[in-house]
Length: 207
Ligand SMILES: Nc1ncnc2c1ncn2[C@@H]1O[C@H](COP(=O)(O)OP(=O)(O)OP(=O)(O)O)[C@@H](O)[C@H]1O
Ligand SMILES: [Mg+2]
Image 1 (cartoon, rainbow, N blue to C red):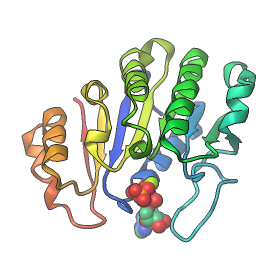
Image 2: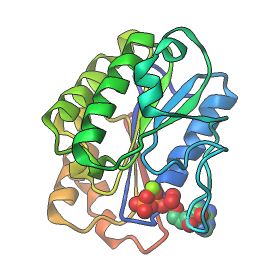
Image 3: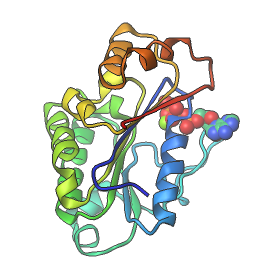
Image 4: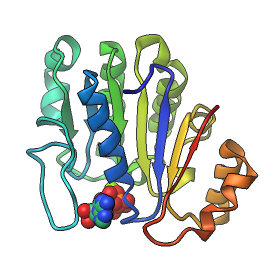
């Protein structure tokens, strides 16, 4: 269950289980009866996703193609089903446009948990940063909790970071990432993050 004001970041290097942890949380949201929509570049959040040895499929009942959702958003806007939304291209411009349009529709629909993974592929786009900051600061008014997965803390835009209520992190050792974690989670928490071992994670929650 995520409350309307909640904003989660699952961060850490490749293979540090951030997507797994995000999926676990989204599974709890589904069990609690919440609607979940996930922007899913690697098609790994739904039970009908692309299974490999490297990923455990997530808990969403099914997936949709991004272009189909954008062409006809009626199911997103008027329905109550949960689904993963999978882009057909990993090109930055396509992802940035697709993410922005999907997130705008998700906000319009409201009353759902909105999640996005692999921020690394589209966070550089100004429109993505604006949209994330909009969702992070305005989402509460539309009952839209936010759950993000990113390899680096600095991939989460600054204003979005100021709104985080939970940071679930694996090892981060780049000074910029450690500084960004310190800014939101405090120095005591941040100084433990570069010392984490492979597979270890730490969770910070706002009081
Ligand atoms: N509890 C667990 N114990 C051991 N391995 C696990 C556990 N949970 C997940 N894994 C495995 O760890 C691997 C990495 O998990 P995951 O895909 O969540 O990483 P990630 O941080 O999202 O990586 P990437 O940056 O590449 O997306 C997967 O192969 C997954 O099956
Ligand atoms: Mg992942």
